[in-house]
Length: 163
Image (cartoon, rainbow, N blue to C red):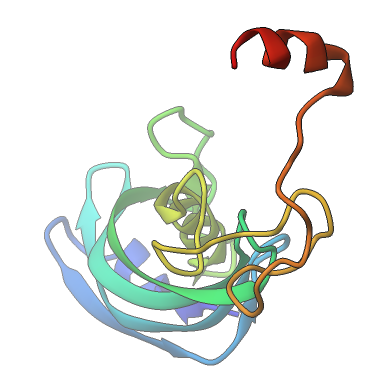
């Protein structure tokens, strides 16, 4: 869990700040696995909430879209988000809130930012060769023993015309 006691900051005057040192081990964020979170987040008391600003690094466990092998993707998250104070109504510009007990849970925000940092097609490496479409061999590990595609037999007559 990535939780911090910010109860003193919720009652402080505007402009008061607090530095949070984020340093966790493996985290399970619902449908996403992170090896760690490391960085600093500055919490600033602003009108209507707490502004979180900082940089957090992590490494996510993903699956390559070409070869389907698991791999780790290093990411850097640039954070800037406002947390509502306890007892205030939800607002569209501040979807996260400090708990009634004064504790701030960064996990929902980190989860969202991690999803935004993942590329549309995550690859284990840029030159990943993927899987053979016929036999399923991982072309990064072994050469394929399949014959070259001969084409659709229904189009054989057209192939003869092109010779």
